[in-house]
Length: 503
View 1 (tube, one colour):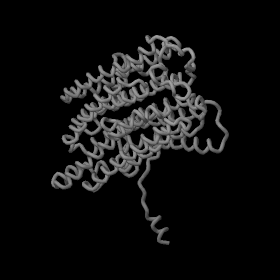
View 2: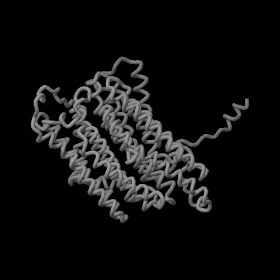
View 3: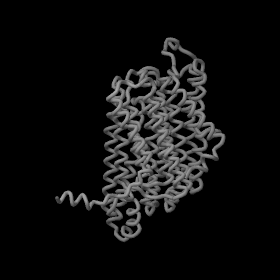
């Protein structure tokens, strides 16, 4: 009787289901893949991938509709102030959906080529995307942590999903162990922030920072320790130096489409969470955490670029390149921290969001080419595997060249627009040394991309090259690479539409 009375008096938060529609669509798609895939015979060729693309596309369309709703009704919180409906959150949702679409297109032929075709990996893409969207819209540290774990657990399983390759099993285990450490740092930081402010809600943390903690030195020390641990946990997730050591091994060992997904969606979600925590909950302490971000950016820029140029495996090269790109995004985060009082409404935040979308498309196309060149077993991802690609598959080599030039930041590509944005914000906020280091790092990293291009176009054939498995570019993989190259050039030649669209 008492339980029934308690149930009658329980008042749950009001839920705007329409505002949560992108998450619900992704969840529904994942459940269909898991349940129907388990109860029915194998679906026809390409159907798993096309269904995943359709689900992510529908979620992206709903995100655009929500963007228009925000234009008319403004931003608001959802589910009892646990999440935000705002333009930065919707932008991240669109970015995540783009990453899912590209990863699904890359995965179709890869799984059939490896003899492991099934719905499981596609369902994990959609479930990981839910965690990424939750991280990008969280207004509470506990909700953020739940989103992080949904994303991370799916990534651990995906990294180890190629059961026929020991390297995949190893990468999944490494990622799981080190990811667990980073989650522990993050959760310990959350507990210290809660202990000092009395809340995990970002708005209440901000109020406590301004009204209570400044009068209590012991709470101030506790909060600063919590901020430090939060930064460590998020730095692990974005693979910032010196918390990057999991990245090269995991990227190399994981199935190539999964590597593309981790490098794009995982990074976008972690940086979105970093922006929300630092700028919406902790702008009062920007002067304290900004030097740490500055140092992380420098170490990540220099470390990623220098370590990349000494690699011979292209997946490891691009793993360190991804670390370097995280450094550029940190330049934007540092610039946004100068305007921390403005929250998520600043040019620094816009530059970071543009960079995340551009990089998601770039990394999807780049790893698409690696998926094709890697051949059966992902065994030809070293530079020798790319030798002579310009003669045997000139269109594929040309697409890879465009994507590499964009990652190097060459003008008339989307990569130049993204890098110019974050470095320009560094100059605007008088972080001149950081901007110069970023430009020098871009020059160093250009050597890495040049090595791959030389292998494709100039390197002389060697004995045994003719006996290698032929490079195949099936339909969906070709679509993914073409879309990536088209977007890269469209943004490079006509950047205004993307710049004006950013929040």
